[in-house]
Amino acid sequence: MSANTPALDAATERRMEESRARRERTLDRRELFGALVLSSAFIACAIALAVLATPERELSLPVALAFVIAYAVAARIEFSTGTGYSVPTMLVFVPMLLLLPTPLVPLLVMFANVGSELWNMRKRGVAPSRLLYSPADTIFALAPALVLVLVGAQTPHWEDLPLYALALLSQFVVETLVFAIRGRFIHDMRMREVLNELTVGHRVDALLAAVGLLAALAAADAPLGALLVLTLIPLLRGFEKERTARIEHSLELGRAYRGTALLLRDLLEEDDEYTGHHTEDVVELAVKVAEEMGLDEDARRETEMGALLHDIGKIAVPDEIINKPGPLNDEEWAIMKTHTVVGERMLQQVGGLLSSVGRVVRASHERWDGGGYPDGLAGEQIPVPARICAACDAFNAMTTDRSYRKALPLSVAIGELRDNAGTQFAPDVVEALIAVVARETPDWELTIAAQAEAQPTGGRSITVSSAS
Image (cartoon, rainbow, N blue to C red; front, top):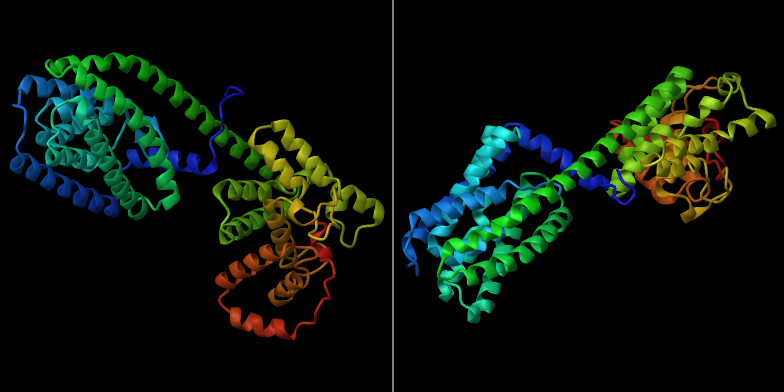
């Protein structure tokens, strides 16, 4: 990827991967229900509009067919936005509204969408069942067609520009409502994600709608002349290929970083079996804590990768220190403390995403009160993913057998976390960690009772985590 190509954020990367996988598989039960409901609603409304509304233009089958083919060609150009795709169809859709019988346009657009989806099935491996969504994907066409019919602006005239703007606004409103319903209830998207994607699509649609409107106004007496906008298709096709290549490169790079991280984890496990298994447990717990805290997906990814690699620097620590059956002396402890710096250096050499994860690895043994290592960071200076890794690392170390002691009871470990919140650990991380443990521990009430009888630790450092 070139230096000026922005990397995809974690949420966009996830949505793109999910979208591609979804297009290649058969509709599940919920998607099938959604497709049938939305498509049936569109077809009913489109037929009602075609039958009940009076068009201001006569239907010319050759002209209508030419526009349907042109629309299908434009729809084959797809710019991925995450969960969906933005297509430059406004170049053709706006002239269709003003140069064809307006009440028929939604149905004609549906036929074009079906043709485009058939092409996607053949060329892009889209599952045949996805064809059921073609009518649903045309719902956006209903609102502007209805508005133009109601306000009597079915043909192109400069003085009707405010009415055309109203029709475009109605399209965006309906599109937002429908996409929000699909995103939330069918694809489990957050509303913020839905709005972010729609903002990108609407910005592109508004710009292309202006070009389509100019074409319609210029071709008022010769409708087929509006199809000269298709001369832009090769240019847009080039942009599509370039964008797709960059996205593919970014996704492949993300997979490569994750593969490298897993390979490093495997090397660590081969070097020290306990540390490898300990790392897997810390990763699972850290991800749950990050979700409990409501972190965004970029922070959750950094937390996951940081937890996966927080001990990678121990490859450079002698086995006799790692596996020593007792406390470390000052010299051994000084060597042990170098593992976070070594880990960061290793990840910086890989670069990219793992370079930023190296910052988390370096800070994974800092303390909330500033008494940690290697930099003595305190409070908000410590990256949030590193704070989570530190607490989860300590908790797992306390609740598993070590070479020099047996695992502590769950109640004692939780007591240690609470007593050291605000000194060794970030208070909000401790709260989230305990909430995760509480939710996943069947005998939580018994644990609370046992914890009440435990001796307070007075805020001392949890030394069992230091060599973890």
